Length: 215
Image 1 (cartoon, rainbow, N blue to C red):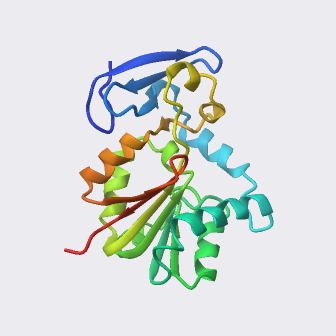
Image 2 (cartoon, rainbow, N blue to C red; image 1 turned 30 degrees about the horizontal axis):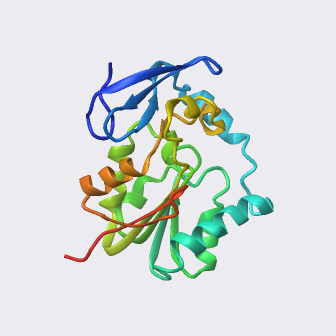
Image 3 (cartoon, rainbow, N blue to C red; image 1 turned 180 degrees about the vertical axis):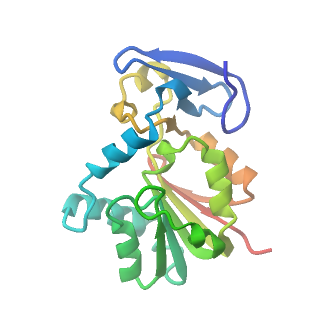
């Protein structure tokens, strides 16, 4: 049985008969991840992402990001350098950050794979509907935390998994083939501790904000 990818605690496995996937559930923090044999290939994942209608013309998609920014960013930071990590085929959040006056960059391993953005530091890093796709969420969290300026913020959007395994196995979010990891608030507490960030805000559903305190 694999150890938890977040806290290295023992896991138990549950079989998802609807989508024919094995999930491993941490007995400590509750992080839930698909068995590696159930991960999509690089090419399949890329093809699925290209089908997303993620553009400024998609009003519902834009409004989703506006709600996220109004709750998780606007009350805390309003200027400086910003990075949108995992910006997708249409970098909508990047455009919204620029409209707010941020000096913004964006990165996506498939659609804008310019790793030079990781040479810079930022007052704000956003990552929306990305962490559920990551095979190494702890490593990526630490990498992003390391790119924050003192006093900078990391804002993440991803949906919290239901608490009970039985409910999880009926949850719509886990049906997406590219969603391979699912989070609890305890997971984000662990991640923030590992990266020496303060856990500043959550709506207890899908918004999470962290701060690098000034030394």
